Image (cartoon, rainbow, N blue to C red; front, top):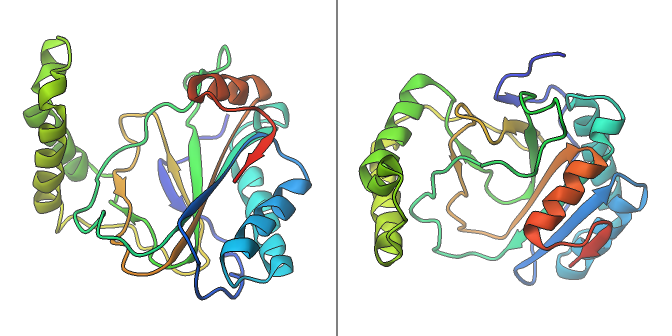
Length: 244
């Protein structure tokens, strides 16, 4: 089975449809089989809350799905289902301080596929791109130091002190923002798709950008039907349903 690095920019960029603004904050979610109606449903969603032209969005989403599914590790059955999400946001101060984090495990793995490097693919159609640190020992060391220092209960394996959780999250967020401010970041240009792993110790540390303008952010991950159905169980979502 081919090995993929934990983070990479795919070699073929996507032609971004013309879109300049959105009318509201909203999210499109789909857990289910990869199907031809996926792009049309996603484009209808975007056409209702932005100035994007529906047919142009269909072309971009189809290209995004085609490129990423072919890049994903695994055979046809192992990449037959997906989770596609489109996050549309208006300007907000929520991420003036970065929310540096690693993505955890997304679904229960099929037997014999626990060690496969699983990835999510991301494309920004409008606005600032995701902040992502180069996955190296220096970045991971700082991130681990912060979690150990601020989430002390994880080291003792004791119950999480819920009264202190919010305070610890806020304190860690500011601490990481300071310590990681000069760490080298992945540079993602317009139309580029970034692939990054999840659920592993070396999964890239990343954050939402400072949302100073309207933003449309698209992500997708792949798995087998049973894995994505397991993801639905974990998230109380309905398999095969478009939600927006």
